[in-house]
Amino acid sequence: MDANVTSLETDGHRVSKVHIARSEGKPVQLRAGTYVLATGGIENSRILLWSNELSNGQLIKEDSTLGKYWMEHPHYRIGEAIITGNPPFTHSQNGGEVFFAPTQSAMLEDRSLNCGMKIAKQRSTGLLTEISCVAPDFGRWAASLVGKNLVCEAKMRGAWEQEPLERNRIELSSEVDRLGVPRVKLMWKKSRYDVQTAKKAAMRFGQFLAQTNAGRLRVDPWILDEGAFPNDKPHSGHHHMGGTRMAATPQDGIVDSNCKVFGQDNLYIAGSSVYPSAGCVNPTFTIVQLALRLGEHLVQTNA
Image (cartoon, rainbow, N blue to C red; front, side, top):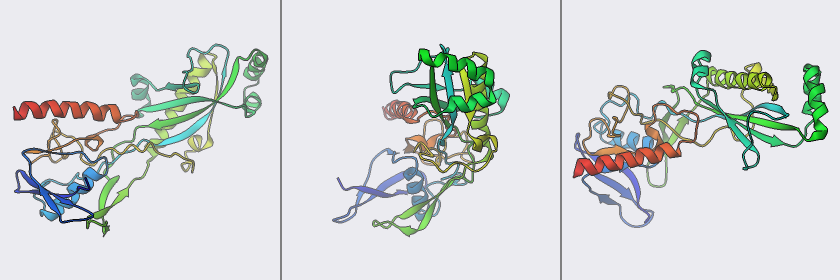
């Protein structure tokens, strides 16, 4: 308890000890044969950056990607939909939500990234009247179904994959925490590709509703105008990924395919910081799979 890892020490090829600070009492050192750094999608980079600075670059000898290519899942409202008749999908029992995503062929055709869309029923907002002004034939048909409880309004939110960009990164601050470790500066900006990914996915879903006569979609103006991102919340999934990316060579990443740090014989990294790309779904299951895979590798390696 009260054991805060502040840095790793290396002889240049193997980690020899871990430095641990306490809020009370003297600092201690921990020695082991194999070390696994598993402190999350920001702290993994932070500890490696600080340890590398203390070791004069002997921990991560090729550090050009350390802390870089950091990613999140932007979360924003995309629009509202009128769902009519008997749509070719069913709502789940969990609050009436249903999820959609473009197919691989659609993403290739649109040159877009992964995007997941969540459709959730909402109270009537007069959307049917507004859509009727744009699509009167559809509006009249939908209005005729209202008394039969065959029409519902739904809001649509999107969460999508970001392209890995070097400029999105973790750096050490000049400020330190109470244990003397530099705090983090997180540089994270969205790109025009983010807007395009959400726009293409929304257009695909709108076409699907129209072609199947299941409803109509009204996309929020910020997507159509490709303007500034809305100031609503949540604007991210709290999914911290990247910074110690997996790669084939140390020039392109920090860990190899077994999650071992390049240049260190006994240091591994677990968690979403090793992701070279992010997809659009929650990262937890992949974290668990990689942890199980790493555990099996360590058993075999140390047998």
